[in-house]
Image (cartoon, rainbow, N blue to C red; front, side, top):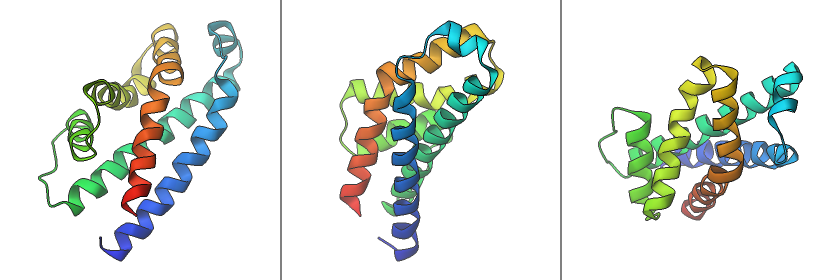
Amino acid sequence: MHSSNRIRLMQIFDFAQAEIKDLTAYNDLNYKQYCDDKNLRRLVDRMIENITNAVIDLAKIIISEKNIEMPDSYAGIMEEIARVLKLSDQNKSSLVQVSKLRNILAHEYMEIKFEKIKDFIVKHQETVKLVIKKTADLL
């Protein structure tokens, strides 16, 4: 692996791990809290957006390093990194959902957004942790 890519992967890896650690404080977040506290809502949205972007960036670097043609969409990138890292179909599906969350955070109504935020916290966070761990194995 090219040294500049290794350094960038380590930076993204460290950042993503810190964001995930911080996000665990909100594992019990409920809809009322999410709606009532504008600052909390912004914080949780931003942490998940940061984690999602970090995983996509990790995936893009790894795909590029493997000289694989870069998919045209974030969902395609997540499918490809799942293949490269030999993840299960369930984890691949989870990563695709994570990639779709990027647009939802920016464009959906609060009720729909909260459902997706809660899904990330409950269902997809472990898959993201797995990708980050497997990325560390490549370093």
